[in-house]
Image 1 (cartoon, rainbow, N blue to C red):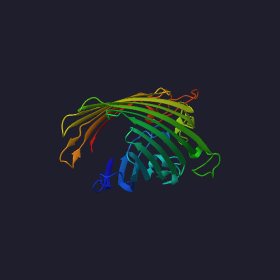
Image 2 (cartoon, rainbow, N blue to C red):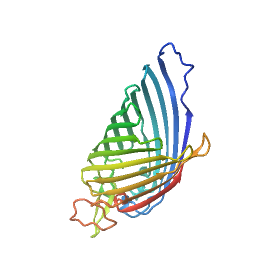
Image 3 (cartoon, rainbow, N blue to C red):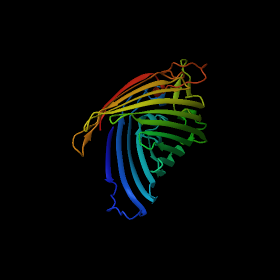
Image 4 (cartoon, rainbow, N blue to C red):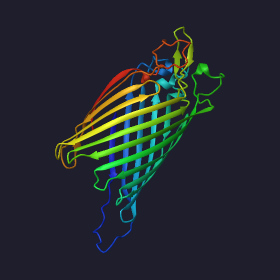
Length: 347
């Protein structure tokens, strides 16, 4: 993946302080960030065609973020964040929803995802409150999201505890493979819409042990309910019969993570992270990540990193033509299979 991160405008400094008393600071622009990325992949395990076939995909995305802040009274900071993202992809895999057409509407799509946040920070008492809202739309998908976060920092700034609560309410159009549609003239974006609701909570504790060592512990609890299958993923049984993917209508997830950072000096930092994941579908996973940021100059730094990830398969997964008609749930999605991955890079 190629990422371009450009800081267009950084924080404005204040004029010479007035020692005679506090002056109300009006709303001003804090920063503007523009992020763009391009991604391309190949593969031959597409769940759209039952676990075999092309997974060729290209994706280009861009996000514009604007942050503003002001003080209503001393030590009471307020911040507003606005973000607009757009993403466009082309996919040979999705095009096989209807293999009898060439470059059909399902071969590409565009997604828009605006979001906004409002944060109040009491710098004197160490409290911060955040409210978030988001919306995402593409041709077969609508999502509304909202969240609330509360953070408490100790008086000596060495400890921090935060709690975050989020909810996403989705509507999904049931786009079926061409052979499963109720009529020959039904469009690719066939309704009715199905619901999928996701609720999550996150608990984070951070501690500065000394001037060089910091650590944090993270616990997430997530629950999904509704239509969790993908309607255009095919499954071919051992006897040759065909059906669309079928998965349970609920899923509970528990990730636990630990982060440890060590500052070796003015130029070197070691950042390490481990996460354990388990869910109600039988999936367990382990993630190991290490970063070694190096400050080359006061204005330029390089951060090489390595990430190792491993997981077992969910109890409902099977490769092409391995499921039987007697099974209640089945999928050939390789994202739910057993695998390991290595990721090496720098930023």
